[in-house]
Length: 285
Image (cartoon, rainbow, N blue to C red; front, side):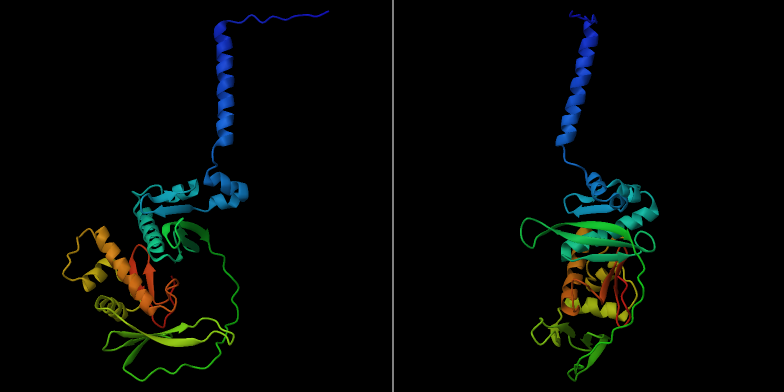
């Protein structure tokens, strides 16, 4: 015998149940269709990745925090210490975008940490649209035995040359540099050769000033006044166009004097502070 059960409920209860059910269904559909955040993607791959700060930089957006760890690291820009770290991060990311190379900064934002900034190439070939930065803790490696270089020593041409480093010479009077670079690999192996480059007037002034203050960090304001003494510098620091002008000049000098301009060993950036020239001493950039 069939038994029927009737539920007598007010109309408002039926409407409420229907509305809540519809909202839950819509929420599930939207959650299934929406793109996951970077934090969710990192956690899905490896939960430990989300504990490392990730940043993105572009000229249009500035610095973007890609996960909550990055936001917590630098969220309060009123803090003087955090503001200093933010300035160093901005400087490193702009350098990666403008020079199109990997930038590495040690001890940021604390000892034993490394900031690594990589340029991001856009849809058009050789066009850098932004930079991606990651912070991770350095793991000390076991020291290995030094490798002794072999091969014939290159004899420099006679002249009034000043040794800046093992692969760089600067003429004492003329705007010339001699730089030792590796040639393209061949069947016989990779050989080194000395190449002579001419320096422009502004390039020479910048390089000689850095050489006179070797291993001493020079602020952008000091370098700008050395190179462009007739262009006034505000007490608040360089204007954006002045900073860009100085960065372009540093980039040009690196093209002239660095064996590998994408991995500078002489003219290094002290991010958030300025630039420094290392000669025969080892650069810690």
